[in-house]
Length: 544
Ligand SMILES: Cc1cc2nc3c(=O)[nH]c(=O)nc-3n(C[C@H](O)[C@H](O)[C@H](O)COP(=O)(O)OP(=O)(O)OC[C@H]3O[C@@H](n4cnc5c(N)ncnc54)[C@H](O)[C@@H]3O)c2cc1C
Image 1: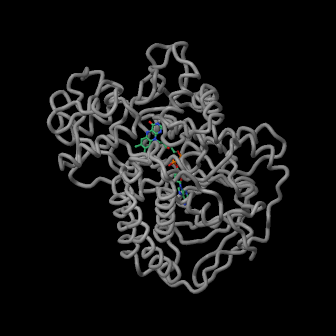
Image 2: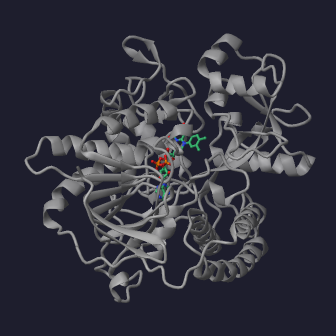
Image 3: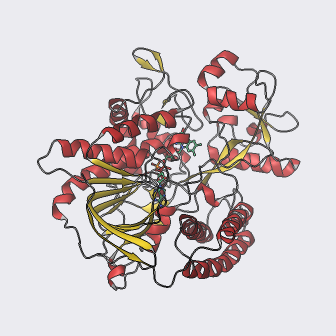
């Protein structure tokens, strides 16, 4: 129904299509799916239906959201209150957060949880009236709603079922967004400072048949998730290449706080490199798990009075330090003293992972190490999810909303995505009637490109970026390391641009360009940050 193919033409054996939609959503994690459902439900109640198109680069369920284990934070009982959740969020973020955003998100949380329940999401309960709430690092109360250790997969299941059942949402799986269309494509010079720039739609690649589609949209929502794949070890799946951030950057949107990359302290360590690295949820430490070094010491109390339950940045740096001191590739997480039956019930996936690796958690410790996990920064948005480009919104991990400040409090990100998608939906329904579709968008320019002969080169260059970022732009940075990373990346920039110009477009090639842009932004913004705060730690700033 939404599919409006205006015309197609062939150029050098590449099929070029055009289509139109009212709202275009890029990404099928919690941010994209919840925004789609809100709009579709609104559309059902109005006389003029809204055409909604959701595209995603793999299958719907492939997203960071599907991997979330711990849960989603919300005040849901009388022991807890909004002030405590607000204070915990600000404290974790080193007070670099935008207080009014924090207040908005925390106070909206119970309503957004109701949305999830309305869409059929299940959460574990203690009894028919009370949720079984978990406590995680940095939280002063137990306030994490969860479904076993599979919360994200459960949310993704419920939301994808709803989206698939909604006739008003057109789903395009295996469609890879290439670039945003702005005034630039009409020959007008725009900069980051240009005040009146607009997004008119996107170019996308159908990765199953090679077609390039020009999609005209009144409003576009970027819900493209995180960037973990720019690092060697990450908990993020392979889709997390920062595409939305790179596209928005190329289109001259403002991108900020990129230096605040959160490393999860406890990814499962396996001698065979796993991509993504399996996460041992923070909730395991909330359940009583204790971090130990290779001498068996409960070392965290040397770094923070909260011990193993200190916020992630402190725990990740402490583990990094212990690993450097011992020369070992991991530390241990000890749950041997906890109730085994309860552990199995709460963390069935983690339990299974241990069994698969020959670890009996009743007797053995779990080997863990930090891994790139979450990006606090991203595309700068206001409280309605509006970017600095008109008609372009962003929500979820790709956006920088001001909620997290210098460090994200555990389980606040699923919540942030829900709240900002709700805000973006409210904004969209008031703006849509005022926006006209452009029907004069230029086709993607395929001139001068040949077949992709250089797949190996693309993969090797991606590996190089990951290695540069892990070696020089990890948990503990120095000026020299950042400079080295910047210099190495310059060369990669030149080589990959040359490759881009002479190759036929492919998902892998564009992901490489996107990862390069994301790496550049992290390095540059890390160099600009002149204080150690939250997730940014530069040894050369220690005594300043
Ligand atoms: C292992 C793990 C555990 C976590 N645990 C928790 C937790 O317990 N609580 C919590 O709050 N947060 C947790 N997080 C973080 C949280 O899951 C994410 O921040 C959140 O799910 C992001 O949602 P999103 O919708 O913004 O992005 P995602 O869920 O990552 O979705 C992004 C979507 O965009 C698509 N996409 C990307 N680029 C393109 C493109 N170029 N073209 C088309 N489609 C594209 C992807 O295919 C994907 O569908 C965890 C993350 C991980 C990795």
